[in-house]
Image (cartoon, rainbow, N blue to C red; front, side, top):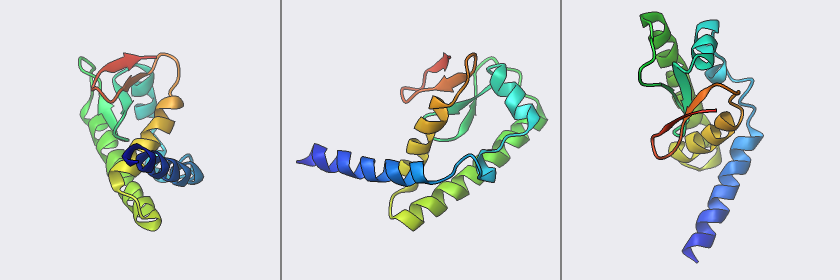
Length: 120
């Protein structure tokens, strides 16, 4: 019974996130410097819903500021969606991460739930 409840809850939350237009939100728009860093595997999407720095990458101070700002916007966005739909911020962030990772392009790096960075 416990697993069924989890699946139903996850399905409900997935529908909530899928219904949200994340491509329009400023929390998900990235500047040219962030897009270039994603293409170079310096920055990547993480399973927690936030951008992260791939070890060994060369991240300038400007890039670090941009990523920090995007992650702060995402956190606020996740909190808003979670509150409106009665789910946790972590669930919202994780489900959104699945969508973002699925949209990552060839040659980009993503960090899975085990913490491993993978180049697509």
